[in-house]
Image 1 (cartoon, rainbow, N blue to C red):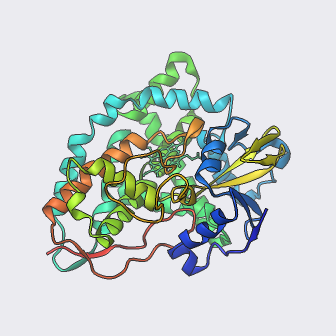
Image 2: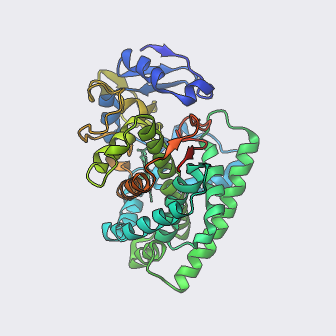
Length: 393
Ligand code: HEM
């Protein structure tokens, strides 16, 4: 297996990781990424196979768990109940309970609200140059996830701050300062959710938290800690990636002059292509639980492998001219939302937000243009913009 060196904090790489991925794929389905000390799956075939193979999973095997430093305990206490970090038997139980409350009727019911919020935000766009990320992309997902969960919308600033601080725990080369901020954010988030869950327990509403509580009370044993972690996971996962999928999509559409395809009829194909071309999440890992051969490579129990979603999405073996953005490309399964047991629960919601918000944005702002070339934030796994400076006269 070929060995590659590439610092995940190199500014040039963070801005554009795709040439590196191309080199990895040219070396085969798997490569060794020296800086992470990890085997990486870069081809679509290998990433798809690993996502679906139950001999691999996200939960860290017992003999691979590292002692948790005292100062990080509050963060890992929350993560310990996260369905994203668990496998059987806890994962299907938690996921099943959430899916019971996260119904498609509940999600579809949010469509008129997404439409109204989109119009409202556009009505309030400032004149001249402004940041579309904060004025638009950030607001829609955070308001919608608050409404879905029934959390007061006035909390959006705190939720954004907590979530941004917690995400830094996944940053390569994170500092002690980042860890302290993440822990503080976790403690505040947990305290807020604990109080909020108790309120909803006393006075249930027509929201997801109340539905999760009642699923718990039907004897399916969602503990208070699991409930709190699930709410935090939904709030974090529910907006962080969606914000960046909107930001990356607007940037891609403007850079490629694809506005004309951003219509009610064309948006499904176009938005899938933006998700394939420049997804917001680039790397997830899996642990091997029993010996398995994937694309000719044999994994042993205890091996860890990184799945490079952003690389799989550009694989020319699956997509003709995978490196080119084609607004009318036939929709094919991209790996942006994962696949298999951990397939993103929020994919229908995120897709709906993109498919409603983007056509309204481009029909109401036909002159929308990039003011400068936008830069990506310096965190490799979360591939999203720092800001999206535009003009919309
Ligand atoms: C899982 C991507 C939006 C909730 C995942 C995974 C990916 C992903 C790749 C699987 C990770 C793995 O296999 O290791 C995205 C993207 C989004 C998005 C690209 C936006 C464009 C959302 C939203 C929600 C959400 C809106 C909730 C409201 C979750 C949850 C999981 C998950 C709970 C864990 C599922 C499990 O472990 O069974 N997401 N997501 N996501 N996502 Fe999303």
